[in-house]
Length: 330
Length: 280
Image 1 (cartoon, chains in turn red, yellow):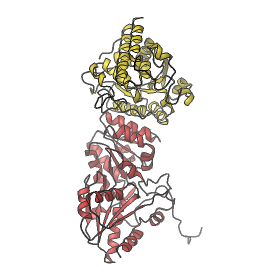
Image 2 (cartoon, one colour):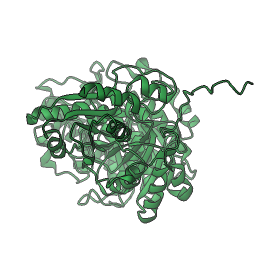
Image 3 (cartoon, chains in turn blue, red):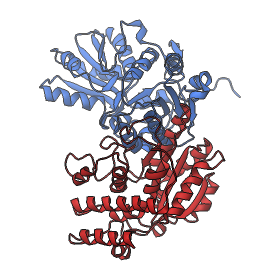
Image 4 (cartoon, rainbow over the protein chains, first blue to last red):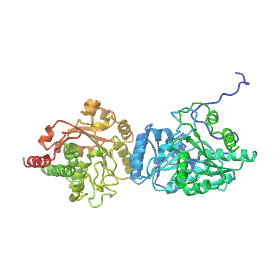
């Protein structure tokens, strides 16, 4: 085999979202849950044949008697989590975002949310974080979960967010859907003066020209974009909104209402029903009408391919996002 | 309530009163799933008046046996049983299905004391029961989880997920009752989606399975007792073949429908017919 041949990019299911040379933490969710479970005996872990791929294996190894393998059966997973919660436990259940939100929606709605049960649903491969194709790409998970009454919805940015989120999620009484980044997860927010608080949006950096409001990995992208655009003399503020529901409307209105800035909502999610539409609606309701743009995935079945290729194609890579915003402010 | 063994006549009297409560509620609204309430009354009489342990004055008592109503449209039957069990006051049946009542037409956990789950989206009850059974074992409770579901629910894939997992986890604290009245929304269940041979299927799925005439109250009582006492570490299934409208001859004979029509003047006739059967 020729060594000159360029290495082909992969559309493998599991691909790290970490950039080359980026600092990462390994399995932040698994370690945070294990740590918390040492203090809280009510925590149990449940999964539908995806412990290894949701970092729940770390909990399983530490607490085998508190781990429940429900098989590849997401409806059962959600129903059983509801029953378990009724008996006083706090189940952390894991699967992929597509399977929880698309296959088991009614079970989360009726068995868990309707009864306000203390079930924490942590789902890997949110939005476009795999190149494996639409079967595993949860481009609409936030829209689905936002629409469910009583459900708190969280989209963490990085390993720090996840580490801090796990105890906060446990302290909250009621059902939570949290997007999960697993494996080697970028560590970004520790460079900033940041702490996760449930229900709070946080201004990570200020800037006079553009306000990017973002959640999840798009906050990481936005911070990279902000650094790149410094060279072009474009000053970018980044407001991180890890809690999608309930939305921190007052902080968002305050920042979006500051005059003279283009407001860009950036999300790893389809344009339909996610953070962008949620914020757009709140701005209109409040009569706050800045120049408003959306960076989001298209309303389409996404392609299979290597993740970097797809992030470029759909405009959520740092490079494409930088150019997009630069063109908007020109 | 202490577990004790009642005579056939005592159990039949409980079943009579459950049927009567259901008809009285049906009369309030001029409708209701009374066909199902009448067919399942014997099962509920045995469950609530003999087998299950609970405290009527404290429906949340942690030592209680759980009863999960998967087929939420049977709520009228369960309310009738909860009244007979002393968990809901009898006066409340007049509010059935009315605005702000604790007794909505479809069973919901947040509305009604003694209602353990929100049914209605059929096929969920067994999955939730699996969670209760795991949770009870996890906290070393010796309570049982009973769950009632209908033959129509066998069409739902999640039922079979739950059947597999209950056996996998050796949930010997789980007793499921499937009401085979052979009626679902679009017609006879066996024609909508063939489900027989049901006993063999349940056994193959790893359940200790009994099939009984669900309107022979002594047979039902014996099946419940055998289910509770069975020595193997397996979940327990009671397949109850029942007759829609049981106890009211003119409803038993009415053309079989998922939702049996009862005209306004017929409610009193139904109560009289039930009363006549009680004396017979």
